Image 1: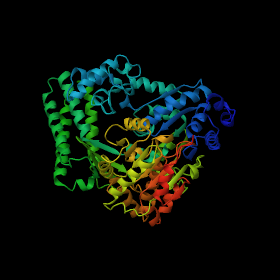
Image 2: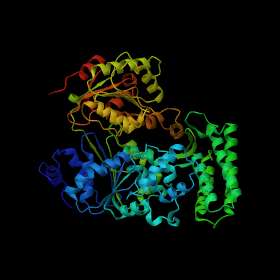
Image 3: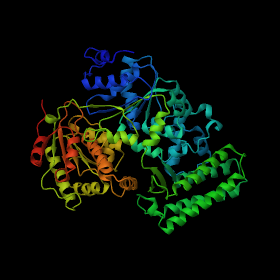
Image 4: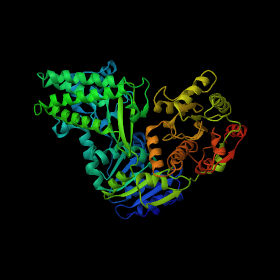
Length: 639
């Protein structure tokens, strides 16, 4: 194994191959610590602040090692960035013989069987889906990978996608007539044979729990697993250790039954008629909830007779449908698969509606057309640590935001990590010179109605003084929309508002404009990288405490209180501090960046916990004067 120090020194391999490479002590420390993990089960947790170069720091030992490596990122976009942008440059220098592959979740690959089935019988497809079907069929004849990401002609969330991709439920597996041609099978095979596999947390957790994506074979083979953006991992893992059932699953199953009836079992009319009744009942269940999409407490929802009766009716009809389908077992492989899915849906309804059980949060979430029910464990520490113990791998968790008050306890406890090695690496940026933190005086309290107009006026002043771009980040959509409405006719800069188009298009427009004002909520607090003057100011409307109405938070708070602990200190405060660190991290992304962070919440100075937020932020200059902050923004760029 090559010495890491030879790679990262000023005249080392990276310096010779990458003209923009600059040696950084923090980068070398992290890479050395990873290479120093010697035995299976070793764990390393690294907080590497912005500018430390953590990507190179974990990719280098991954390419220099001898075993199989899995690199997992927080999102699919970061996964593709790592694979397409960073990995090729490093692989060429450090491990040209290494085989590196990208593996996505099954919904990212074209399903040849479902495309053929929907083309023959396009049941339930909208006009948009039918137009998009022509595009997909032309592309299907050309693609070698089947990666839906190649279909740039389709919008995000295109209506056709559920009809031409598979889920764990409706995949026929080895019984599929197109198994040998299957794009997902080929992608899994490539991942099994590769030295380094680039995935994302959703994919990793799905297979860790569901054994669904090829990782059932991959994970035991891994010698090293690295989680980047690891602060997202506890929440993502909780989704996969949850039990979920939705009316969408029910309606899709009913459509698949109808397709089998139309093609293979034309004498099974009773089955078709029952499926139609089930589909109507599932749609009726959605109507028992508010028209606007929402999340809520399932226990409280079931206190309503109309919801309870509608759920009971759906369960009864699902039982009847299962009984009828079972009379046709063995006649068609597609139907046999549907019966297995139906049995699972029936079982999930029983589990998720058993709301008297403790240790879980029971909640529901509605979209425009569907409602889903969830049973989420209050902690994933025990199942996640058990799953890790079953693997013969070394584990690395890294992010720019893992500590609260310079301690890793909160993160380690959430994942059940016991006595891992820890490393805290400070940013090389000169925050005292490059950035200014402002808490304006004379602000109204966050809940007061006058705060909308205050935020509007401050945003207008920022736009007047800042020659670059600005992020105005909100903790609620309601406040965002209220400020956006007031700004619409008063601001001369390009105004970009979350929800008007896709996040990707908003970011492209923001970067291209160079002086835009973007209004966003939680999705813009992290995973957004804008260097230079295109982003010189970040305003945060208030401390990002989770909504007290969130059912999972309610359950965590209740559980913490029952254990005689302080839920504010142990649950709500750490979550908010990490979220604040993420939002603040959007501001300074390079050694040449400068800008102002404005936080419009008096609680930073009026509440005892304010000092914990301040201690977790970079060591910027500080002021209470909005005028000084605006003057900083108005400084002319150096020639």
